[in-house]
Length: 433
Image (cartoon, rainbow, N blue to C red; front, top):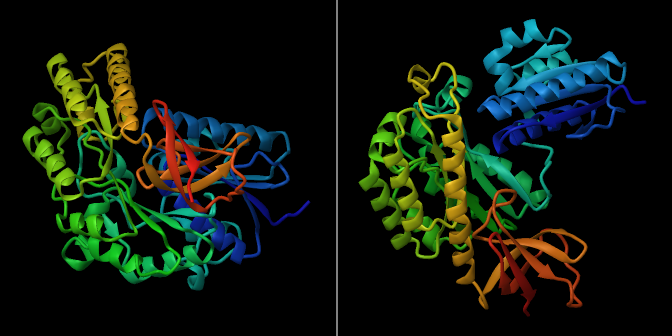
C-alpha cells in the first residue's frame, strides 16, 4: 500500500473544485498519487475541502468529516485534514469539537497544507491544475472574494473582498487547460462582472474574454455568476459578436420586490432589474438567462412573494433555481427577525419551481425541429448526453442524442443535432450531417 497516496474530497461549489484542483496538481508535482472524491481506503491520508455557505452545505461538510474520522478510528486511514470555507469560518470551534482531525486550514492556506504533508509549493506549476471535471470542460476562477456585502451572504466573511487574478495568469492557466483537452471554459467568481476593478481600476471582463478567445482549440467560453448592479455594458458586444462566447449568462437576481432587494442590500430595484433584463435580451437576442432566487428573507411579505411569482411568469427565464433563506451568523440579515416560517419558505420554493417547470417546457417547445450545435458530455446505455451552448454542465438541461445512427461519439465531440422531442428539462436530438 502506497504511503504517498492521498484522497482529496471536494464539497460545495465550483470554486471549491478549482481550489482542490490547484492543490492536487501541487501534490502530484510533489510525488503524491492523488485520487479524488473516493471512498477508496487505500489512500491513508484524506483532505476534505469543505463548504460553509448555507446550512445544508455545512451539515454535509460536518457529516463528511465525521465519516472519515470514524474511518481513522477504525484504522482504515491515518490522517484527516480539513480545508475550505467551513474550516476558514469555524476553525476554532471545529478544533475543539473534532480533535481527531489532524489539521484545519482556511481557503488560502494551500502552502500550509503542503508543508503539513512535507511538500513544498512549486511556483512553476502555480497556474496548473489536476482536472477533476470531464476532460472537455473546466472552470476558470477569475477572482476571489466579494466586495458587495449582500445582507444574507457570508462569502465576504469567509473569502474576503474581491481580488482579481491578472489577465496574463488566467491566459496561461487557460492555455494549460486547453492543452489538456478542455474545449469549454466556464468563468466563475463571486461576481464575474466586477473582474479587474481592483487591479486595473475598471472592469475588464470583456478584455479578458477577448484574450481567452485567442487560444486555439478553445471552443466555448461561458459566463457564470454575473451581478446586475454596475454591469459592464460593453460585455453585451462581446457576447453578441465573439463566436466563442456562449449566448448564456448566469445572473442571480435573488428577488424583484424593491422592498426585499433593499433589505438584501442588492443595490438595485424592481424597475432597474426589469430594464436590465430587457436590455440584455435586446442586445443579445438569443441569450439564455439562468437566475437564482432567494425566498423567505426577513421581511418578505405575501405581497412581495406574489410580486416575485409575477416576475418569474413574465420574464420566462430559461433556467432558474430557488433557495429558502437560512440565517448566517455575522451577516447583516442575521440581526433581523427570521419572521417567515420554514413551512412558508418551502411552499414558496415549490410554487416557483412548479411555475418554472411549465415555463421550461414552453421554452423547450420553441426549439422543436431546430438544429443546434451540441457538445457531448458522456455516453449512456440508450443515448449520448450533451448540451447546447444555452446550458451549463451539472446545473442545466441536457440533450439526449439517439444512438440509432451509425456514428460513434466521444465526450468533447461537437456535433449538430436536430431537436425531435422535448420534456420539461430535457431535449431529444438526432444527429444531422
